[in-house]
Every structure is written in structure tokens, then in C-alpha cells.
Image (cartoon, rainbow, N blue to C red; front, side, top):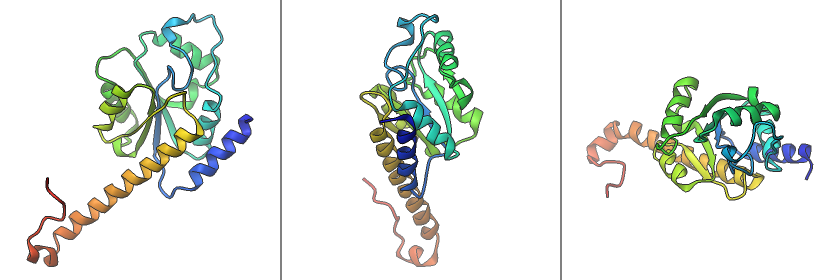
Length: 193
């Protein structure tokens, strides 16, 4: 599928959702590109997964910011590759550093830099431990098998929309809980387990 066709399909997918994330965050290694940076030389010309660049361009066209959260121990190589691919200026935040925090530190820095709340973010990564850690922060997180694809984008936007809907329903329940009608019943609007 050509780059323009992938971009148009990504835009169509986004058009299916009433609520979109304010920020989409990507891992690099085995998410945007099919290799580990530390196994490469700066002199090489990197390549992305086939649908990655078109998805990034579609997000930007839709007005959605993009960022990077990578635990690569070779940030210099990663940044060189982003520059060679013409992507460096596309990202509002580039948190590329080695860490044992399963990217929670990366997301705290992204949050401080952008002001975007965790629940307004969507994250793609190829490591389950990162998905688990970041999900606990309130970020909708999607595990990718073979890089970011249109299928992963669709899944991510679907889960984001569901999470956002649940959040809005809970906000409404809390507002209603303070009303006299609910207070008369003296019941908490949430199930307690």
C-alpha cells in the first residue's frame, strides 16, 4: 500500500472517532523502526516500518501532537536516525534515555513539557512491561507486534475512545452523586469491590 493511501486510510480511521487523543507517543525500537539503535552505526541509513511514516503524517495533519518515549541507551544514534528520516522536528517531545522505570519517568517528563494529561495520551510500544507501567499512569497503551500499523492505530483509537467514555461517565456520576436525589438514597454511584 502506497504512503499516500496509508495516510488517507489513517485519516479515515481517525474520522470514525468523536474523541481523539491530544498526544500520541511512540517507542522507537521495534515500534517505529525494525531494529535496536544500539546495534547500528550512525553512518547507516535507517528505515521505518512500512506504515509508520504515513501514520505519523496523518496524525500531524489531524492536528494531533506526537512524541517519543524510548529507553534506548544510544540517544545520539536515535536522534541521528530521526534526523536522517526527516522526522526530528515532527515530535513535540523526544524523551530518549536509558531507564529502569518502564517509561514512567519518560511520561512524567512528556507531561511536564507538553501539559497534556496522561488520560489524553495514546502510547504504542513493543514491550509489555512498558505497556503495563504506563497504563497504570492512565495512558491508553497499545502493544505492537510488528511495528505501528493501521490495525494498531485502529485498536489504539478504539481503546482510547472507550477509556475516555468511561472517564466521562464517571465524572457525570460524581456530579450526580452530590445531588439531593442521590443523597437521599445515600448510595455511592460506584460498585465497590
